[in-house]
Image (cartoon, rainbow, N blue to C red; front, side, top):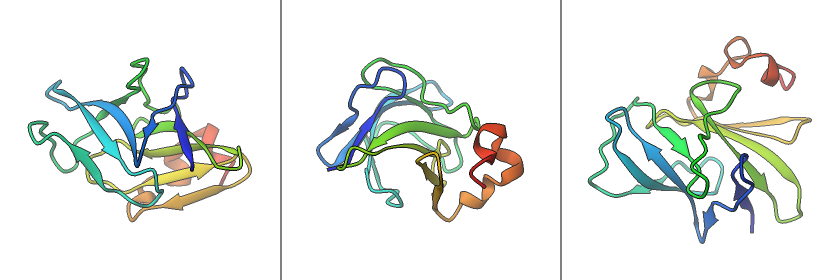
Amino acid sequence: MDDFLCPSCQNHIRVGDNIIFKVKNHRKQAALILLSPKIGNYSSIKHPSFETEHGEPLDFYCPVCNASLTSDIHKDLAHVILVEENGKLSDVYFSRIFGEHSTFKTDGDSVHVSGDDAGKFTYFKIGDKFRKYF
């Protein structure tokens, strides 16, 4: 089974069939949100009292150390580490924008792009760190 780690504390953030995050919306409401560990599956589970609007940026945090998971590649992406069953590590970047489907998995040599909205993050918008993959 693939696992996911916080890039800051290296603790496991996958429990069962979900990756667990602490999130905050623009109204500063905080909640836990569960995301599918399958790249390309954009289903999520959250408490009904946590209000989100389509197109709203969410701030993602590690549920263990509370570190921000906003990537240094682009302000609209969050970053986690994927540990595949064979032990191979990859960086996974996904959109912080609620309802936007963009995911990038990179092992340092190539990038796997997923999601209908991934085109938003073009070569010119990504930044120098990510450009080497395009």
